[in-house]
Length: 95
View (cartoon, rainbow, N blue to C red):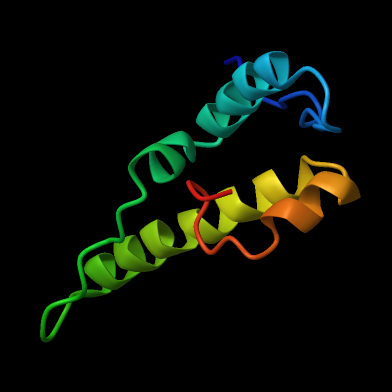
């Protein structure tokens, strides 16, 4: 039985030039990790209700961490010069 393993290429780095190319590559990179919707929508997951199940807690935690994963990807995919312009951003959409 064949296994399916996906290893995306290294993330594209934006240095201030060729934004129109970088943004397409970055969108695809984030989509490969199921993070693009977090950037595109900028919506927080609904808070947990009283007495959540383990599955609900896990789902909430995963959804909450996607924002931080997307932010990390964006911050690590820009040069230090560009990073200084986005380091105060609090959401992936702002960055």
